[in-house]
Length: 238
Ligand SMILES: [Ca+2]
Ligand SMILES: [Ca+2]
Image (tube, rainbow, N blue to C red):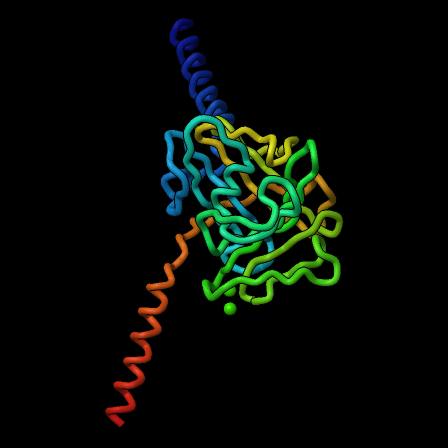
């Protein structure tokens, strides 16, 4: 009887441990993983996710991209590979980006010895073009010229907080800047905006929506051409 009780207790402990370990090693999301990411850039054996939460009321608010590489890569390398538009004030990428996603926009500021800091992120949400308007105080009050698009920025008035997940851990706030962050295979980098949080505060990005690859321009022209042919056809009928 004693032995039976002991084995039941042991079994219960084992089950409790399984649950405990499961939550401890949970990826940042219970209902989203790398298989749900549709837009991947770069090539290589390692892969990481890039999550952006604009928190601006425009759906989808939070998007995710995938990045692949060989050897070593930093958070900066991932942003540079992804961002197709934007500006960096001084540093290696001064002037602009030529990354994969023409819909994704970023403003970076370079600090000698520290690397880049991110002040703004934007996205051509309705896929009809994106333009950045710096506002009265660049870096703090910039906004998208197209109201349909995502763009928020701030350093004092709002803040992009940087979140990391390695080895399937929960999100944790990053003590590193993006230039000093070394990616690991299976890691997640998240950027989350808050217009109420002070520097270093904010909350981890919620479950994202998979970003789609930009619609190539020939496709858009084809659609437009098809529309024109349709209109001509209707006129003829009338
Ligand atoms: Ca747009
Ligand atoms: Ca628009």
